[in-house]
Length: 166
Image (cartoon, rainbow, N blue to C red):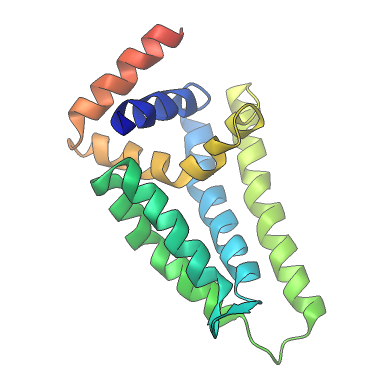
């Protein structure tokens, strides 16, 4: 059942991302947004650990629950971003510089997203469905995985769902 939901969500996301230039801008923008979120989430501590560790575990669990292979790869690929988020947080750096970095990562990341959607001629999917914002990293991995010849059944199901949406 969850596979069907994931397939529908991927198809919905894919329907907003058909232009190759849009997809390419997402391969830059989404990682910048992720590292920016993990950077900010590294500031507060919970049980002696940066909050970003708990944010990462929550997202990794969500991604893996959608699809073991794709979600697992997303979690593995996100680990360096977690490391960056935690290690860039330095108590000796002024709050002003931390804010500049945090805002800068988000502005540049979202800038790439918006440029891509300008090429696409469609607004970002998450404006219609907030869950799509959490799906972005898995969509990037899905695109690579199916182009490598893996998860072909999922690709066929997503394509069939796209045909149904059209």
